[in-house]
Image 1 (cartoon, helix red, strand yellow):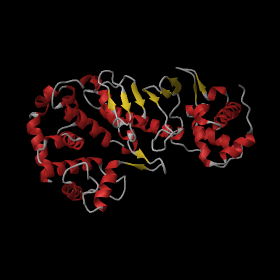
Image 2: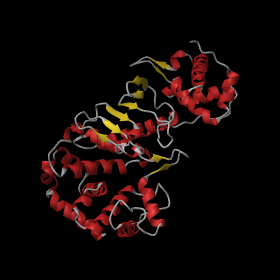
Image 3: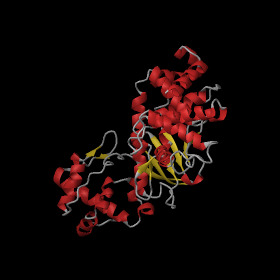
Image 4: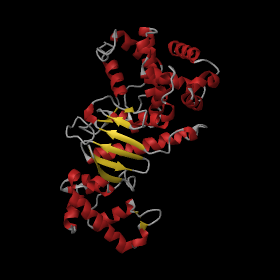
Length: 385
């Protein structure tokens, strides 16, 4: 169907700064099922913008054919076009050009499939606003978090001498349906597919991607494996750029993380046990021990950006050990896994931990001590601070 362009309509449309996001040319904005009546504005914009650029700069300036057809339109060109139709608003999106080459498809049992050079996403969109993926804007935000977070993760791992033994070249498959409420996420060890099945999955996607990179080593029969695998995934996801794993408040679009909320509630509640009530026995004692450590180690509460997730893991580990001793069940805590691995990284190296993840049986050879001795040293370190 031929699409006509009405410059007066486009001028009115882009006079609203909220509509500038259309210039990202995110694929779903061209799909009527998701973008509704705004789809026509997206198509009109594409036609009008490319006509303007071709007339001013020529076809060859924006189109490349190698290795595949790419249309390269810069942010400056988009702003020139806006000015030419009488719009003073400035387009300055952080998404500009990021999703070039992404394909959007239909997928049985899912509302949308998104295919990029490094990943495929099969997504059930939601209607209930308690979920993140209720809109194109929120999906665009998540894909940005994932793109940037995975790129950062690969860069950090690339310095390892074991990098060529990791599964970083295969496409990552993400199946996303928040309404299933089956934990934040998990990786199927038989095929490496990432399942993100609950509200708050934004906090899990980088963590689970770490498991994908180590998929060839997830089936080792060694009790140490969980400490190393989960600890490394927590360490890498929590010591990178945390904004890629922040949750998003769906009402005001403000980022947050549950750790910062817990710290704030425990502090403002005066360690009265209400924050962790129902999660642990003796919650008041646990909260007091947690906050003592967190404050003593210089923890900051005021802002999300100042809340150290590594310090949170150490404080939670300290509180669990001091409150419950060597209780086996409480020792199976992600905070303990993370704190332990962070201790290994800080006192040895990330490469040591990666090597031990690849071959748990070689732990003592790699570190010069058994896991049991090392774990006792870590406990002594935590409890002495």
